[in-house]
Length: 246
Image 1 (cartoon, rainbow, N blue to C red):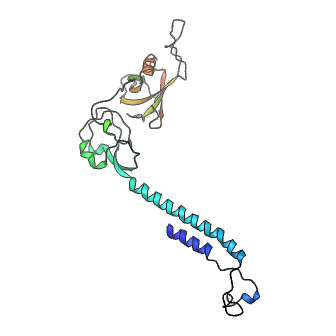
Image 2 (image 1 turned 90 degrees about the vertical axis):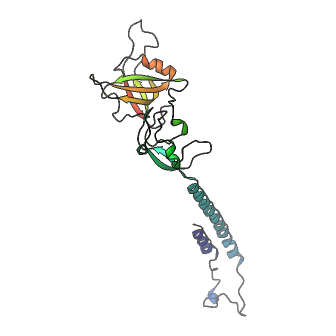
Image 3 (image 1 turned 180 degrees about the vertical axis):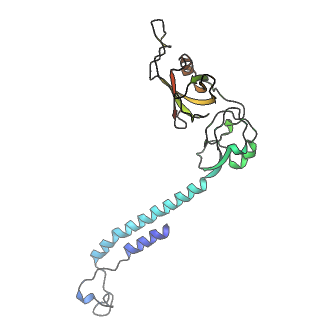
């Protein structure tokens, strides 16, 4: 990269000065009548200066880019990530893990890939999806629900949730029908269509005899209480990008 920049400077800086007349042609065009070098015209010197400045700036940019690229590559280190979705309590195996080269910001706690033996055989403390980087507090005793959060189960039928749902996925839980009728229904029970909550999938139980699938959701404690009051069959789960549930 730096060699290309230097070549650019040479090309723009050391350009032969323009000829000043017919007497300057030939192999000795740069000599005067007495055989001495002809002085470079001032106009040409002024014309050359912008190219010189531009060349210097180009070198600075190229060198800076090379340093940045090298530093970025050197800062990337192999860390452990999940190769497949895992749920709370799942005992990790080597097949569940893979190595990913990342450039972690200062203060971010991750598990280096060369410490894989320290996590194999240990249970997961939370549910995570594939590709999630493994942090030290993600392995060990269960840490859900965390303070201020709760886990609630909802029953959904085919067509009310994506079949690709797995533990660790982020979802939006949407009310699809009115949940309260009559004057006796409380404000908390009347959840109109479109009411929604953000949550993270904790677990997905296979469909039972009634074709309902039970999905465990981790969400804010207040929202969990509201969601628990919505009758079965009046909810839909919308999958969101990773990390969108909190």
